[in-house]
Amino acid sequence: MKEWDNGYLVVDAVYSQNKDKLVEDYIDLVPILEDLYIDPKIFLQPITSVEVDNVRATA
Image (cartoon, rainbow, N blue to C red; front, side, top):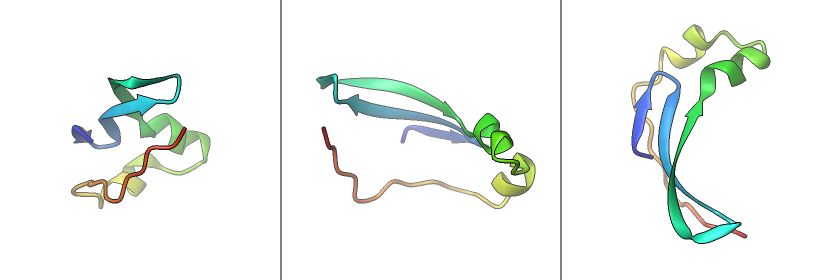
């Protein structure tokens, strides 16, 4: 995880189709939450930080 901005994440990822290359990717949680009928403002408001722990790469 490189950046967190109120539901918008910037991450470094390795994908199974190209295991040798680190790729910067972007994830916007707002439309995902809206599709699940969750109010993004209410859901994201209490989140003050995000961290990743115990990550395992799988093919």
